[in-house]
Length: 88
Image (cartoon, rainbow, N blue to C red; front, side, top):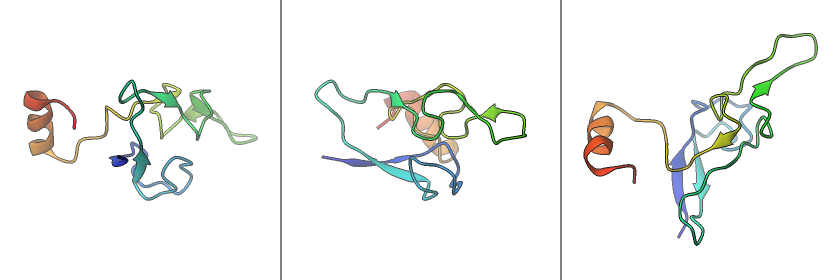
């Protein structure tokens, strides 16, 4: 069963994971919620336009991998819920 997971890009239109929607579909595999290579930076951790300084990727936060088990928090109630019950 696939789930909608929040994206760390904040709804940026350049995100190749969610397309700017802020959420993407994820289907947990047999091993559960596994990290995967970031489609926006292709695992390179930085985004560089020709003639500009490279900046950290906004989709994976500069790690090169997206962890669907670590979605962004949607407020202080969500932070407390995750602290007590874990990410769902």
